[in-house]
Image 1 (tube, rainbow, N blue to C red):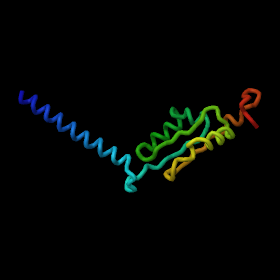
Image 2 (tube, rainbow, N blue to C red):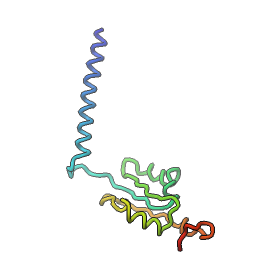
Image 3 (cartoon, one colour):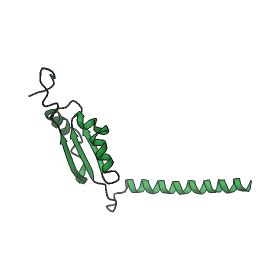
Image 4 (cartoon, one colour):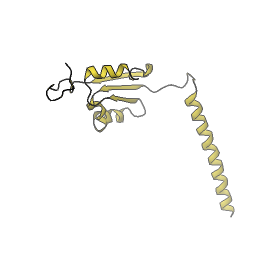
Length: 123
């Protein structure tokens, strides 16, 4: 009975500590405090070789830069360069702020496909 009472006190204290941590994290997240620095970003632009690259080069990049940079994969499967530029101009692709430190551009596979085999290709 005494052991159970100590256990319940411990659980109650732990709940208050976790609640305090949660409130602190929420306050940091929503604050506009300039002392909170954002992690650098790596922006990946491309076609399906970028979008589906999580098992290859994109995954390896994420692994190498874990906890040091955020990887923003903005690949679009099936898009050629012309389509991607149209898509990007009407989306938030360019709205990543000033914390982008590296941009990769990986297009060409859909641009080089033959129009007879891929009627979506516009030259």
